[in-house]
Amino acid sequence: MYSNDELYEYVLDNIQKVVFPEELIRLKLSLSAFELLALMMSEKYQAVTMGSLAQGLSVPMSTATGIVNRLVKKGLLARGRSEEDRRVVTVSLTETGWQMMGDLKRLLYAKIDRVRDILSAEEFQTALELLHKLILGFQQEGRQPQEKVPQRRIIEIE
Image (cartoon, rainbow, N blue to C red; front, side, top):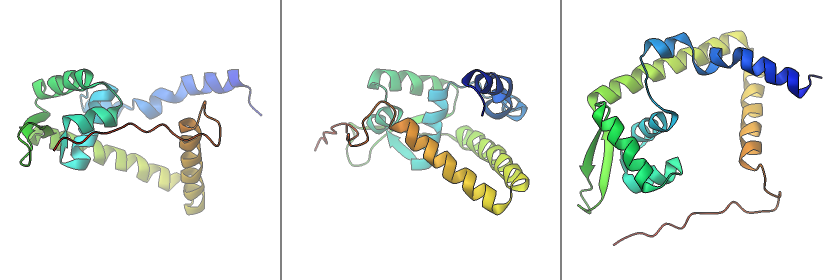
């Protein structure tokens, strides 16, 4: 069994290989984690409201506005208005944003394919199950098992 110190050293020695592979550097992604998450949400939902974006990033609206401002300036996002309610601001990927997200997805899919090649089908399934279990464990950290997750109250403006 590895000690926490040994695991810490192992993670430090290898995290760059997983989190910052050379391919990402070649894509010239000069984005913060929040900017990347904002782009991923915009890609997933096509056009996302500023309120939904702020909620999805778990940041105040002023922070979400700053993130979007930087992405608009980089030419990756564009602002728009909701067709149903012109007061609602939406953001969506620009053509450049779509291209960058496509490049990023191809890179990540290639990484997943490399993992599939290394592991058997059963090992890959086990790895996914363990990853899911870890994510759930981190989400529940600091809460009692019976404790409910606090929900944000969303007020819809009609």
